[in-house]
Image (cartoon, rainbow, N blue to C red; front, side):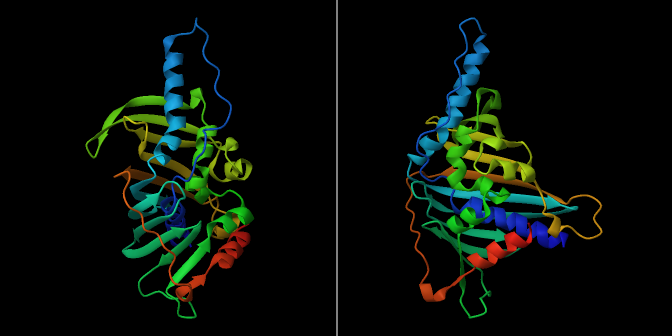
Length: 286
């Protein structure tokens, strides 16, 4: 049970996080933090600058239109761990992407087109012989509301900006990523301010620790999100004396801004729609 739950969490998070990371973010929204009074120390001004840099990063990254992307998801529970890796390219304007994901020695081909996730695993076919499965991400989000996997959903990227205040951001230094100079920030996202925050708070806690690395143009080069997910009661082993938790760390990197992205849906006669099964599974888990 634990191994199955852990694998599902790791791969499931990678599916959504790796699918689309930044869709059209629009403005950074939310109320602006009040400016410090003139009598306050200069550190307040530095904090405000850091917050502005982080909050504006999503828009500035989206302005690059496209990028190559890698994602690494590590999940651990009950003394076991699973790591999944992905690489591909993403259209930062509409969220379409192509990726290859690898977990536990298995490779999955993935595409996201018009908010629909398509996946193909070698040697695996549906009961009617179709080699691709699809999940309507928008339908799942509308029916289930926020869940831990949606923390990495690109549709929530703008929401990060709205959920960050001056007290939530601190600059911790500089670092080179693939030869590019970056500023590194630690961020604490107020989960209650995210869409579906009430439900999400029950599953991941009140705050979401995040680190973000920005280049000289204010674009995201690396982002790391760490969370501890509380498993639904229905997923708990019967003999478990305490709630099962899965610790998930997701690391994303962006490079080669402006790269070509060619994401197309597979032929319809090769696709099996798994959306309803996903929705039923979510309902069974409470």
